[in-house]
Length: 183
Image 1 (tube, rainbow, N blue to C red):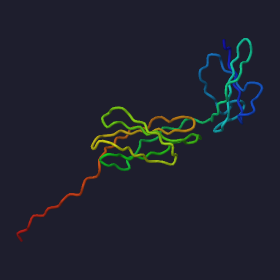
Image 2 (cartoon, helix red, strand yellow):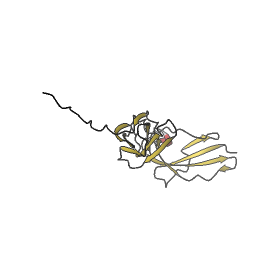
Image 3 (cartoon, rainbow, N blue to C red):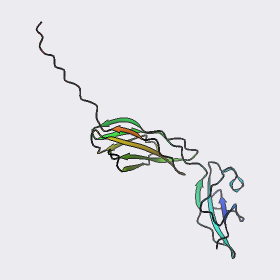
Image 4 (cartoon, one colour):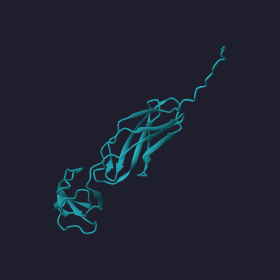
């Protein structure tokens, strides 16, 4: 059986130390890294590579493949999406990137429901400069719910608050009728 795990950290993904950078108990299934002291260095907002090797009574096993990671937290939860415009069959919403905590923005997920409180659709946006999204094919007059997640290289933010918008165009101009005057 595995007695413990040896963790090896590299700053370039090529050169690894001969002795472990850290040891983890045999029972671990995930670990939280303190980026200020891990491997004897402050790795806050830096890339580094990790390999892990199991240790049993016969010795140290072969190391895993390298995993590139960055010591940053997932993005903060964004605010609710705003309404830009709508038509009878579409709604356009706007959104903003939340605090990224030093990680790189990789995109957004816009969640929208079916207008009847049913299932949610998820549209992934990979253009990191895009800040609006239009949902087409909607039924006129229904209330559609929208929420957003910010995606970075280290994970996804929490879900934004839900915003509800109707698929409806602005009203047509009224027709004015002035009856004939007797004066």
